[in-house]
Image 1 (tube, rainbow, N blue to C red):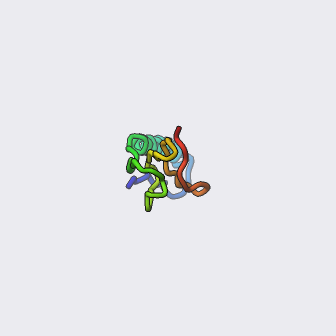
Image 2 (cartoon, rainbow, N blue to C red):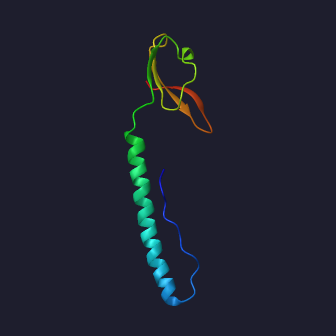
Image 3 (cartoon, rainbow, N blue to C red):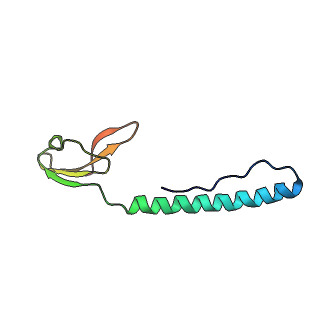
Length: 92
């Protein structure tokens, strides 16, 4: 699990304001670096499973990222699970 940097308490003087601004710049850079690293990990991860089946309904509990070749349809399908969509989508 990623550990994101935390922000310090409130500021009282102009010197502390400058120090806080510099800290925010460093914090932002650390956050961007952490998010970029996580994006690379997620993008490099393979699909969960690859199935060869007659129909995708044969797959009992698909997980997000699963891929199946549905022989009856002659299509590759990927399982999508988001808040708006959940189900098999044609890839070709």
